Image 1 (cartoon, rainbow, N blue to C red):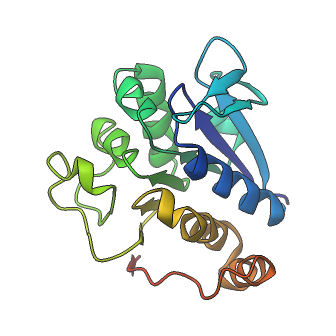
Image 2: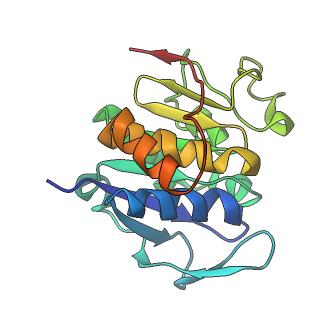
Length: 190
């Protein structure tokens, strides 16, 4: 059965952190839906690059997808006040479905009360709110959460998401096909 993922886009999302995982997941044959958290489907990123979402965020997305992916960027600070987003994150976690968050997006994991004591990483700019973040690893996987540092780690993050859904061999295959080198070294706890 084909796996599926949903990637959330809100105005000010970090383009690299959204497009790398979307591209890599699709290369791995993961049905990847881009969901707009805005009124329109065309969403502008932090650098002004606009991406047209596949659909609007709706109530059934947590039931219809295997994984939730949240890019970082200034959009995260707006989403922190969005109860629908926080509820969606909480629902994925409650159902033990994988969640990927990169850059500042782990703040949403904190706000939705799913981070708890799990190991994680994030962009250094949010270390005041996430004082226990691991700054030694580029990608950290703990239980159903995969976190990453920022735009410079987006390919490793995407490959880590593939590994969660399809295993290490598929992630290596996709990484090799794009000349990404080896898989990221990350701490993993069951």
